[in-house]
Image (cartoon, rainbow, N blue to C red):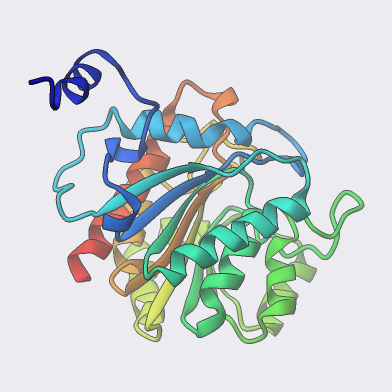
Length: 294
């Protein structure tokens, strides 16, 4: 007589915690698996990115996305909090490895950019390429007396993954020694200034680059956007890209198989939610495009 009544009143009266894009799908049913990494222990300017995963979820629940039916997504929660960069990287590596082992695609809500070192090492070890949207190169050998942080993660990745095909899009000014390191290691750089002045040509360059890849890991640092659009980031840089430009870039990148995605450096303490909304929309854009080709 009372069978099913408990589920009915729970759904009627109680709200669960926010879930990315309001997904209630279970892990086993998913193609894309979302988890958060609330970590910003190496922040060098504005700490606060640890609060981003939940804010991105809240934003995603209040955007009217279209065509969600084709995106089979499960949100499995957040990494256990830690102030140790070593333990954070170990845990991200373990979780990403489990997700990949189950034939699913990891989607990570950062958190600071250091996390990409662990996830990219797991995802890219079987080939494919890495595309990073970022205002910075993150290729320093050392920064603020440490060699493992948000400004050095990509250099550490290249030391462990020789020959990884990589493109960085949206870079502003960069020290000449880092440019030289990038050129020496075959990293393609598409500066923000070039994208803004020659948008169609830049899209063609991205299309040509992506055509050489069988699959791609995509890392989006939200400071790729101009601070006028996304003030809530940890290290803002002037003269960035517009959301419309980034949307077009994402649709081109995700024309090949997406094997991993992270969105990092959202800092909810420095805006009124704008950056979290753009982060949620960028993830949706990438997943919707990827779902159409899968």
